[in-house]
Structures are given as structure tokens and as C-alpha cells.
Length: 202
Image 1 (cartoon, one colour):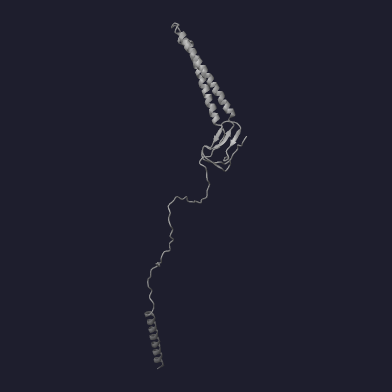
Image 2 (cartoon, one colour):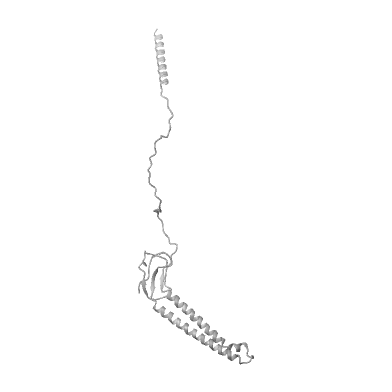
């Protein structure tokens, strides 16, 4: 009898457990799939646009190297009598801007002497041409027995050629004197940044 009661109690417990399990599985919540991205309104800023020219500011680091690095030196000697205010280390100068002026007096005198020498040899050339004209008239009175060398001497061709050479030489001297005079003014060969200066007045 005791055994029957135990069996009934055990079966009742099993039945109760099965009922509870069935209720739990039948009432559990189910997962639902939803979108991963949430739809929200975008926040924007509105700016009024105006046309124009603008220069952007670019901030960068590095080493700035010049495209050309030159050392200016005068091609003629003399006393410096004028220096440009912008010709200082750290300043900027434009192409063709005068940097220094050397005293021109000596070079102006040299040009005047060269011009005077040129005028003198030009006058000598004119006189030599006159002598040649007289020699040609004298040559017409002679016979044709002279050699080519003698004819050249009679017509004063060596003297005429020498006079022409002196004129050419004097003309070259005038050109050099003018060039030296122009070189007393030292200008910037291009837009430049002055790094150092080793020249001063006097």
C-alpha cells in the first residue's frame, strides 16, 4: 500500500513538472527583426555664397631654397657714392632697381679722352685720304712700269690702312669707356631677397 502511494505521488510530481515546462515554452517571448539604421533628420548649416577672388592660406613647414643664388660685385672700381635704401640684408628688391652707384667722374673723363682721340684719328684719316687723292693724280703721270708693291706705296695704301686701323681702335676704346661708365651703376638682375651686404658708402 505504501508502495502504491509513493508511485502515485511520483507520477503526480512528473505530471506537474511536465505541465509547468509546457506552459513555459508556450508563453516565451519571440525576437523580432528591426532595422539597424535609425532614420533621423540631418542637421545642416546654410551659408550665403558670394563670387570673388580669394587667396587661400596654406600653412606648411619646410626649407625654402632660392631658384638662383648670386653674389653681385662691381666690374669697375671706384668710390661708392650712393646706396639704395632697400639694399639691406633681409630686404627685397625688384629687377632693374638701382642698388649702388660708383663715382662716375673718372669714367666720364676717360670717355671724354677716348672721344677726343677718336676725333683726332678720324681727322688723320680724312687727311690721309686727301694725300691719297694727290698720290693718285701723281700716279697718272707715271708710266706703267711700277710693280704692284710700288704702286701700293705710291698710292699710300699702307698709310691709309694704318689710319683706318687707328680709327677702329679709337672707336673700340670709346665703346669700352661707355661700357665702363654704364657699369658704375649696379642694378638688381632679378627680383631678389638680400641675404648679406659687404659694401657701404665710401
